[in-house]
Image 1 (cartoon, rainbow, N blue to C red):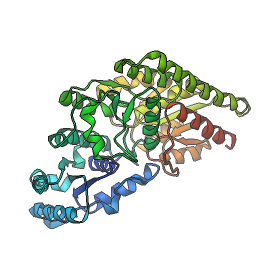
Image 2: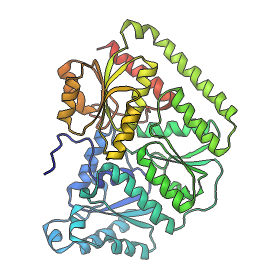
Image 3: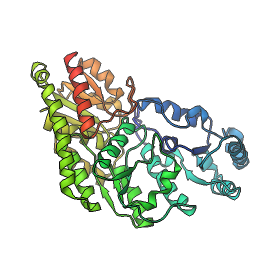
Image 4: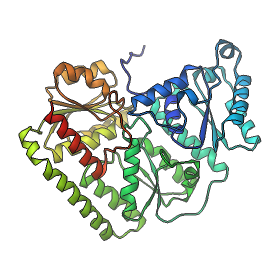
Length: 428
């Protein structure tokens, strides 16, 4: 019997798929599920720091199957929902998504999707049964579905020099996802690279049809690896993989120089730009020097979140602020091979590395860890209050924090962190 998990930090396969699709303008998901699944997506969106998206829980079409369809099958109900959706909702791409009940009774969503295609609409399908995966799997799986099925339509061909696709930042699961994609786009543009970020403001299905045109694909977390490998297989596009894009000069310098080298960009141009960014960051550091010593920023900290978030914060806190990361708790899904790799990466800056999903266990680890500061999710507010120490929210769910387009990577993210963390420690 499997152990229960108290206050889980991520949802099911369906939720991950929906959070991904609803951040592409013009995409209309059509759920074949019970009524609660779409609403869960709406509620989960608010836990991600802000409920953005072109379609939210209440506006996502759903077949709303009940006992009758669960027992006898719900194909006819799905056909009716698809027919009505296409009539009243204009979309550039319709995505039929099946949930747990539809998959258990074997409803044929592939045939139903083909009916939309036969009517002249762009459509694909994704089987998103929650018992087959988690929120991260939903992101990976739905991207695979788009790359596999959309390429059968009018996907653009021919290579566009300097075009780079970005994968691995999960909408809402990364609570700073909008700002992080914006920051990646900004820094790449400064060395002459066009970033196709695929999600968020201004991103439509047209950007997805340009994926085969890219000169390079980039995965900025392990959750983007499957996508870049799939694109290499289908389109022959080379890729680069970064386990976690960080804060400050080392991480961004490595990121830009690697991409520039792969694309044949003069490294001298990149280094000139990096020097300007470094000057800006150094100026910000100098401005908090007085606060740094007066309020003793050299804290012992616990960092809680997914692997890429831990790499991002842990490296910056130890190198630039002189903090000691006593505890690092990795919360995203893992396997044995992934555990070894993550332990090696996170162990470079953390004294103790844990893999844990259960909030009660995480609270216990922190309580016994002798730490002065937490970098975690909204779920750590409880233990922070008990220990009377600050909790700076950096990971999902972000209860109590609204985030629009702030970022937590690169130089811009580093300066924002200096501002917010200084205010937090001064007022504690």
